[in-house]
Length: 357
Figure (cartoon, rainbow, N blue to C red):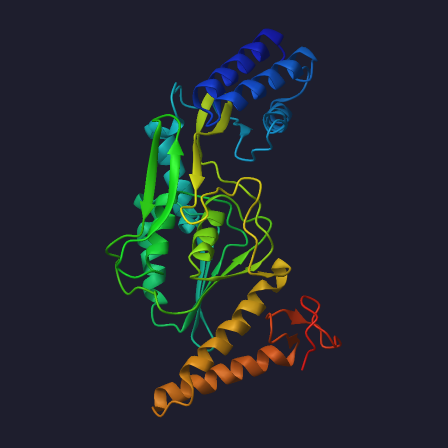
């Protein structure tokens, strides 16, 4: 517990200095600093333990403009004595790299579903230098599937570089401008484009479905938004959280880390960012139903594209797809108009009022 009021005052001063120097919106940084000072003078940081202090500071940082990328975390062990971003510290980076590897670089599941439908679940997009090989291995594993489902329902963010790498698989060799980020610290706008070369096959001519939820945040939203704006995927699930300000971590007290947004992302198609708005799915559906709906749509679309093949292998795949559809539809009604899974006793689709067959 920070018991000395002078120490708390010093912490607020240090945090405010970081905000004024780094936060992507300088004018709002001043408002946030004034908000912190007001809470300090009101005694809101007195006599609370360190973890609660971190929580209180996070709440107050977000009071002005509700930027969920602004937060404070308390660490039981002292942080590296780094004046600039903590990523510049080797010890800090090594520990983050270990955490990323133990999380399999955010890639939690890769699977070929019955009917030759690919499924990948990402929970975080780690930087390309760390997780690039894992992403390319997953895409190579599913390169020969007929459609792909990307599950971002529990994806809470990540790095734009790895997003650009993954997105490059879903477009052709012609360069595509994916996003732009204005970085305040360098006063520079960085453009992200698809890569001219990716290891393995591209997935540029097959159906793609992206699953979202209210938890989907930051880089996860960027990924879904880019594919949606380019009409390259169908987004299915709940509207996403709405965070578009990439940032980095700073030490402002021996045990306290502050994550401060230093950039602002724009979609070159819409000219807007996602802050506070999120991504509205093409098919709005409770996130628990999103995989069923996407799987059903992927099977039906793939079946339609195959027709009645004359070759034995393709004929066997058609039978596998039909069996998967039969099993999927045996337990619930699927709206053929919007793909919404409905309970068997429903006469009309809960999502779009279509009469169920």
